[in-house]
Amino acid sequence: MPRLALSALIALVALTLAGCDQLGIESPEKIAAARTAEGAAIGGACRHAGRAIEDCYTLNRKADKAAIFAGWRDMNDYMRENKIEPVSPELENPIATASSKTPEADAPETETRTAKAPKDAKEPATH
Image (tube, rainbow, N blue to C red; front, side, top):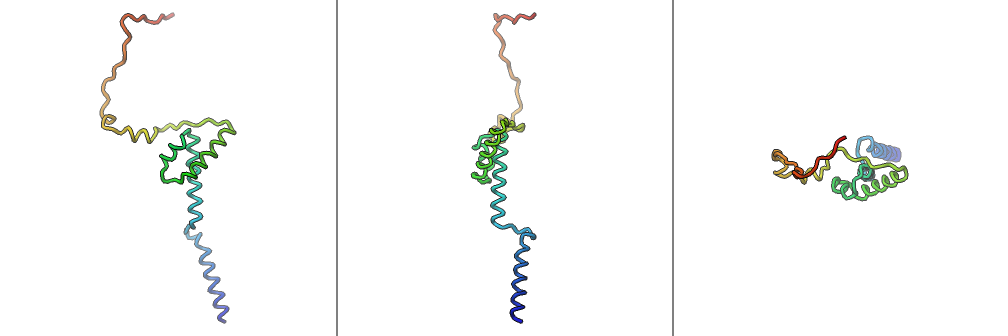
C-alpha cells in the first residue's frame, strides 16, 4: 500500500508542476525569449524606418542591445535583398523634441522678417 500512496503522490506533484504554464507562471526561458523577440522587433522596425542603430539604442534603453542589433541587421539584409527603401517616420523625432524644450521654444512666435532684394536688382522677366 505504501507504494501506491507514493505513486499517487508523485503523480499529483507531476500534474501540479505541469500545470504551471496554464496558470500564467512564466519560466525564465520564456521571459528571455520574449525579451529577445521584442528587441529583434524593435531593431527591425528601426531599420525599416531608416533610423541609425545608435538612435534605436537611445530610444529603447530598456531593450536588449544584442537583440536590437540582430533585428536591425536582419531587416537590413532583407531590405537589401528585396530592394526596399526605408519608410520615413511621420512623427517628430522624440530625441530632438525633448532637447528643444527650452523656454525660448515655449515663447510665442514673433514677427519674422524676410530678406528683401536690393533696390537695384532686376525683376525676372515674365512671358
